[in-house]
Image 1 (cartoon, rainbow, N blue to C red):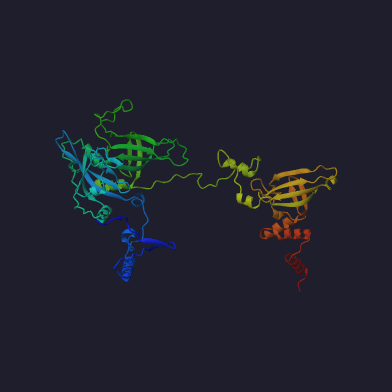
Image 2: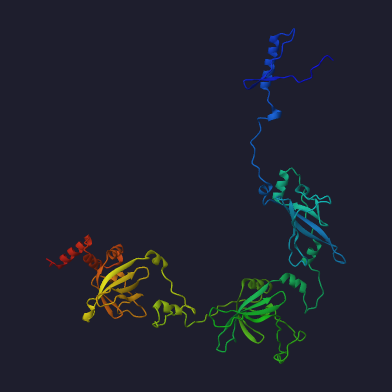
Length: 536
């Protein structure tokens, strides 16, 4: 009642830029030392307290890096095995089908897909039933989650109820790590239709007939293949190799020719298309088969696997074939079903090709172009340019050996003519250039080409090389004789770098002309002197 000031008391003051507690005013009858002691006690209590609420605890662990779900759960899929029942209407034999499916749950985006394994010859559309998507759980817009899937649970998707029976090892490990208790696996129920197809019901058939359905289910894609020779194919007596295929699913026969490489025959391998071959008996031997076709009612018997025996001839539609071998499946089939038949394969003598083993000889050079270019006409119908040594061209690009030469001619007017012979190392061609002198117009005497040596044949020509260009040597070019008189220093450097392929006589002639003497030349001179001395 007596209080008149309701403001909040000031507890902090600033002194020299620092916040300090305000010293309380000592009232009447209060000990100032006691009040100072209380203030120090409060400060010590505050200093030992840990502000957990404001700043949190000091025991927090290190912050882990954030990994998004599409990275952490990439390619991680839960797989469940389930089945659904399909009711069969208006059938006295069966009431429903049990169709197994596989449910895939993708943890990356919580999508699912349902696939039905394909059963051969089932007659039902199988494969992917529901493509990958998020399956709706109810009408409120919720979707199925991996927590809703368990062994023994039902999954209803678009009006079909799938009952889960098992899951794989990865799914079991993942669910147990998340704390989900899995139920015991259930056995997959047996489809009555599949069981009935394994053991077909006995049917009353005549002796001539057969169970076509059983034959189709057991013999589908099983073929007996025989290797034979068609003896009457060529009027000259040559035989043609063929393959005879007997399809066990419907007792049809197919004959195909085997073509060898470059045999010269037209590529029509189907000698006889697939059909059932009637077996002609003695009673029907006089039937005019070339005029009228034999109907099914007139055929008493068709060809069967018992009629095909390896090592014996067989006549099919008037053509005679000799069976000499068969494949591995055919041998196993006869050993299992017809052990009394002997299958003795024999080797067929190979044809002797008169041209085989003979060396192919190239025709003589016709004189047009270079020999290498003309030889390309023998290799293909559309000739291509001869291949060049690209590596050699790159290494020796712009490398030329230059020589000075004079024309060796009985004409006295040719004595003052001077020539420059250039050898190009990139493609081994030679060009000759004449220097202009008084009364003679210089210019190109010979364009770039390979020059054969005198005496070489057209079929096996031998061309000039740097080893033949010694100082003083004579080079014959299409009836003109050139005598080499000088060479530049680059020629000597190149020949010394390839001294193993250059004769010593050529190197010495260049050294003497250029005034270069080496130890090799001195040793050669000494050896000549020793050889000239008489032996003691």
